[in-house]
Image (tube, rainbow, N blue to C red):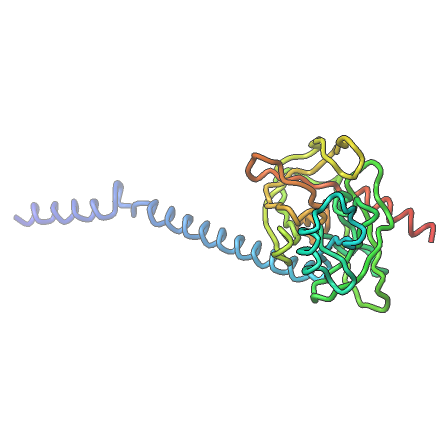
Length: 280
């Protein structure tokens, strides 16, 4: 009886300790700890990314503007509107007799009041342009540059002695697929200070689009593709990387497609700014 009891005790110890009397490896506990650690790491990375987004948005937003395009009602050819329509339009004109006919977005690139935007927004030399800054103040502006080869333009604020915040311009030649980006603008003209997030989903894209009042379409090359939402009214706004640098100018969302938006690379604007400063 004693030998049998002793043998049972030894078997119980072996069963508890494992083969050879050693403790079994804690595979389950180790795997669980690694999984929990990976989850904590992902949560920290996500939180850091969100915090970075917030910092970039807070810093960039004061330099993003809305552009209102208006035309004096008297300048509109009478054969284009009926007398009844003209009466209705008079009711929504401002004190100067101007009526809003379009709009878009832009961003301040120089403290002297230079604003970058898309050329197709400011294509008509007969229209008037009003800049609405982030503090909701209105400023008159004039177009000083329309690119003959690209959908980019520059306006100059007519307001003087006004404190402006600018955006840092990056290098669009260094843009990589998969980069996180933020698109700023005023979609539909009714939702100022809007931001959407996405990634760089394509490079060196080429499309044909109308960028001015001339007949036919221009070929836009080397465009940056993103899945960040760009809607009518977003055109001219900045596309910003995770360093807070502008790498592109939001231009167009591809019709009949989802999450395919395109931006003009920022380097052509940088080149013009460098030349214009040299000539001042």
